Length: 233
Length: 81
Image (cartoon, rainbow over all chains, first blue to last red; front, side, top):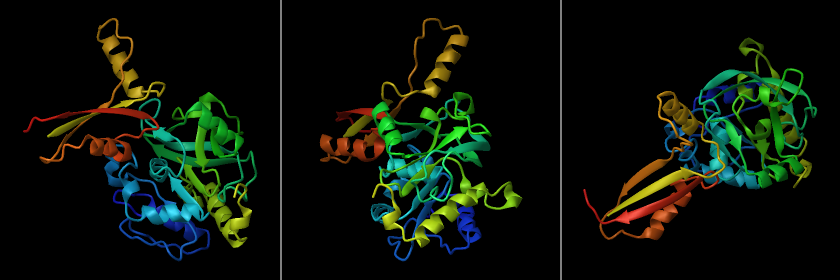
C-alpha cells in the first residue's frame, strides 16, 4: 500500500524481492487488491498524521479491500504507521499513544517472539530474539485490562520488547507500551501490527537480516496452503 | 451554525504531554497544580439548515475521536462568523 506520506513503502517492496517473491505498489486511491496474496501497510506519516496517526488513512478507498483480505484470512502486515492505521480501522485491538517520554525514538531494539500463530512468525521459534529497529513518536501501545487478558490468552501478543538475551522487563520498554507489547495480531492471527521495522533489516548492508525471517515465514505460510494453517480459524 | 467538539483522553489513559506541562508549571513556581490533561477543541462551521446534532455525533464517532482512548462532547451554537 502507498498512502500520501508513506515513506517505508520502498523498503517493504524491497523486502519482498529479497524474500524471492514479487511485489507491486498499490496507491491508496485504488479499489482492488485482486491477485494479491498478502498486503503490507508501510510506515510513514499517512496524511501527515493529522488529527491522529492513521485516522484519515483508514478511510482511503483501498481500505475496503484491505478489510476484505483480512476477513479472508490473507496475511496483512501493518508496520509502524501501518499498525496505527490498522488499529484506527478496527482491524486490530488497542491504540498507539504518544511515547512515554514524548521523544521520537530511532534505534535498534530486541524483540522476543511470544507467539507463532501469526503467518509472520509461524516459521520462527517461540522465545527467539530478533534485533529490529524502531522509529516512531507514537508507539506506546495501550489496551484496557480486559482486552489485554484476552490477547494474552489467545496468543495474540506476537512480540514484546526485551533485552538482547530475551528478558522482558520495564527497563527494555522503549516507549511505555503496556506489557512491553511491540506487536499484536487479530483473533484469527492473519493480521499483524508491529511498531518495529522488519523491512529495514533484510540485507546485511542495512545492519542485519532478522526482518527477512518474518517475510520468509509469511511466504512459506502462503506456499503451505494458508487457510487451514491458521490456529484460530 | 457552529459545532464545537471537545476531545479528551479517557480517564486512566496516560497523558505524557499533560505530565510534561504539569512539571513545567511546577518548575516555574506555580504551586498546587495536581494534574494537567491535554485535549483538543475542534470547531466545525456548518451550512445553514444543517444543524443536526446527530450528524455531529456521527462525525465524532467515525473520525474526530478514537473512542478506544478518547471521550468527546460537543456544543451546537447559532453564532455565525
